[in-house]
Length: 263
Image (cartoon, rainbow, N blue to C red; front, side, top):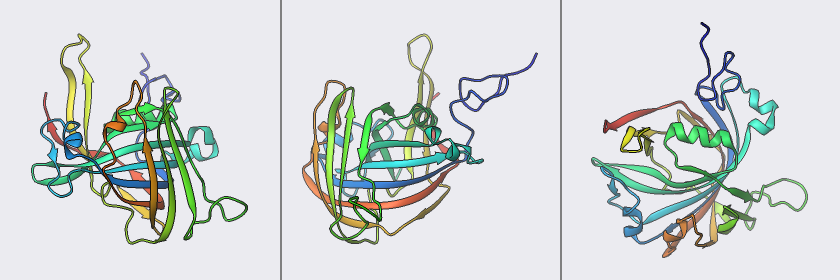
């Protein structure tokens, strides 16, 4: 009997129906990052054991808007853009695992199903959302990547706006921020079919297998968060601004490593 094929469901005789190809996954994107400090207690309540608060600046948060083009190794999606292009907005904090600092995505919204499937594999807690951000362009009214350029960004989920930002670039920067600058520590979890406990419970670490990026720019941000019935991003209250950044990047993701398995 012939088997079924594909890296991720749905699987078929040819594997063509699989929602995502096998890694490596390649990304080109524009990142708009706003960093601020919240009450560290709000970060701590989002960190399951064995993770703990980062020793340095434990209340630091990065809210990142990204406009991506992505593909598998054969790059076929780039010539069928509906399969390649998507946007996301995600909240990142830092945490400690046995003396090492990691970044951790605690909330994330995307606007395509294939991005959710990749997140399930990687341990990102992805949900559907509506994400928009200003795109730069060298002609016409769009902002150039230069001092004084202003970029807007919005995030909505389940028909409610939950975040909005305006970032104004000031000057070239040596970094694109510090909160999202570590390997990611994520949980890959799957509830047991009986509804009790977990069938999969792994703490994994992953990061870019390779990275290239353009000149980062820093600036100032106006950021607002809004409460919503099904979202808790606003609980990460803005207590103090840190900074804002814009950068164009290219990233390859090709798997991670197991830190701990609970089953």
